[in-house]
Length: 160
Image (cartoon, rainbow, N blue to C red; front, top):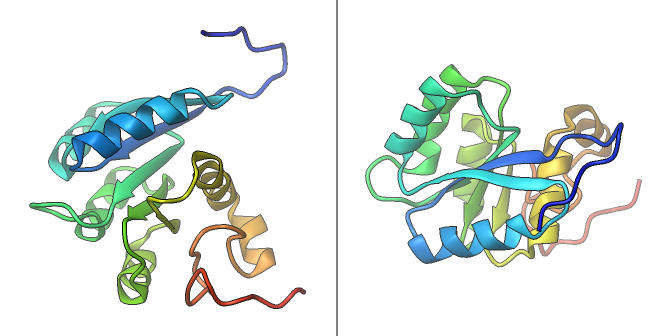
């Protein structure tokens, strides 16, 4: 059920999703669609389809990009995406945490890295934090994601 946004309310966060799993894509689109002020505008089963869409459409506010996919994987896709949309917030999504893959993704231009088992609210919090580079840099790491200065999600971080 769509509701009208009040005057002065920010526009909805526009998200695109790339994942080769039809089931995961459909589920995440449905779940994110229930979140207030969020719209999962488009979703793709491959990087090739995403790149074609980015070349012909305005970029979304954020992109959820699967790490492991057949053909070109998400990490290999990052430089191609950055050429088309250099300021796009790209959050990598994966089933299993792998510190090496996380470092590769962040070095290649990912904004953050999350696990598929995260709740939609947590994924959205990571996306919103990743879209605020000054806030993320001042905190030293993304609060809920597997951001640039965290070795893994399980190690406690000191309070500053």
